[in-house]
Image (tube, rainbow, N blue to C red; front, side):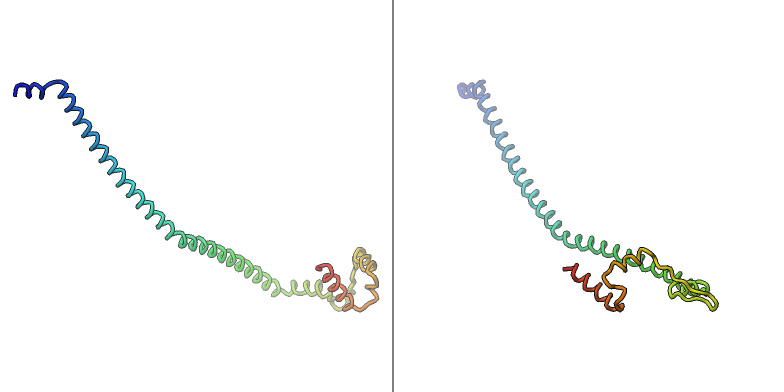
Length: 158
């Protein structure tokens, strides 16, 4: 027994035992670390899967929301334009209620004159030159000129 006790407490035996214990601890910590890593990796994969699912699930509603907001903005813009047009038409109606404005417009647009006045129509000399350069436009009836214009525009469209 004395030999066994001596072997048991010898330096070489102790170093061997310490080495084995240290190796066992390192092995256990590595397996724990690997187990933690594998659990963490599984958790991370699950988290990534959940996030991707949320993104896919929310993508279409978000797209719809954005397009509806754009539609609402477009309708509001049109509504504002319509409101402005209504205001313009109200102003125009109010002006037409004024007899002086109506008389002015009738004289200007329809070339009416008051009794006792003489009406003159001044023709633009440049416009007269343009009609003279048209081949025979002055000697034809007005509807022939209209049809010629339609034919010219049709020919230019082709």
